[in-house]
Image (cartoon, rainbow, N blue to C red; front, top):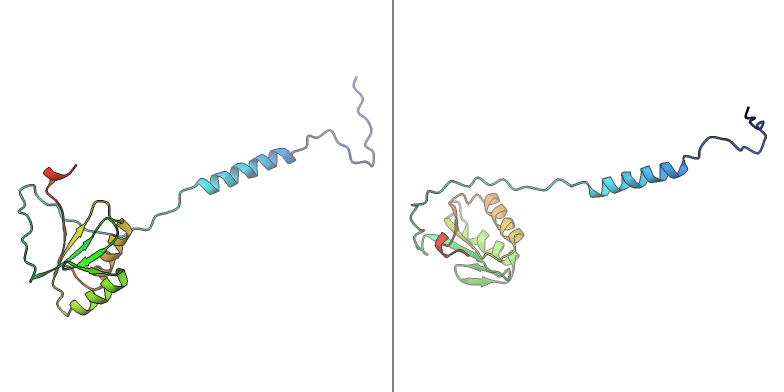
Length: 142
């Protein structure tokens, strides 16, 4: 028969020490919290479906504003370079009247997308609903 020592006042016990197990659980919990994906901000866009035989956009510079963004993030308004987005916004506010004209947007493939989305958001705020995104013909795409 196995004899167990009598409990003394030193506090020793035969129960296992659970401290290392709790440390591992907390480390795993922190790992899962840090690697959880955060929700992304979204900008709702309703893009129409364009048939394959849709005619290309007509060039009518007097009727529509042309806004372009190149690969370096440089803005152009009707082929005039703008110093930054704030200058473009100021120029747009002066040109957008009570009835905003149609606007054609040109985006280089390597242009920063966040800058383009800021422009789309600005145009939605200003009520410019006649907006087209100009694209190259699919035959020229790489």
